[in-house]
Image (tube, rainbow, N blue to C red):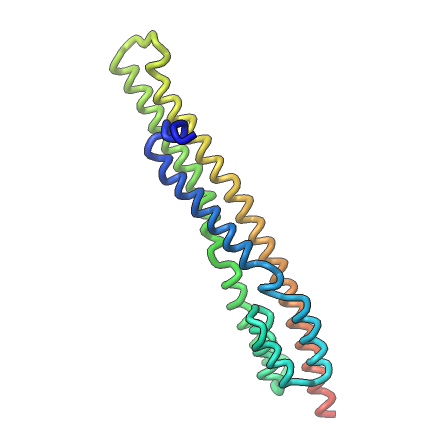
Length: 207
């Protein structure tokens, strides 16, 4: 298999590096984007109950106990719960954008690899065709097809390798972006639920 890959020439080295980077990035993001690392169900249900009971100290302690995106967002809302609804919402959106950027980190690497891997394959294809035409130019009338095999093999192998890396990278990129969107929707739903409870509590206290 290694010998087959090396027939693609030096372009196979960056293509192989792209495949390793893409795989490592995908596995790292899959580990990071687990629901229990972003919006754990047990945390959400317990937090909502504490906020509903107006146990602010316990709610803050719970947020500090859980080192997840949801806890960091909600804790900000609890700290400014005495402010107006618009101020609390603004703070939630500010922290939410920061957490969203953290969730989306490294995903653009997959998009970059999805774009450049086929181009590297095309570069190897051009190189292989150049070698083929050099053989024809050097030998003139080529009667042995084996003399052309090296260049043609390089052209085909690099194209295949580039597409084999680029296509999965595109799929992984789209999948992870969709996964982030789902996580952000859950995070937004929890944040709005807490915001509504805080607003209701403030209205009751001012009544």
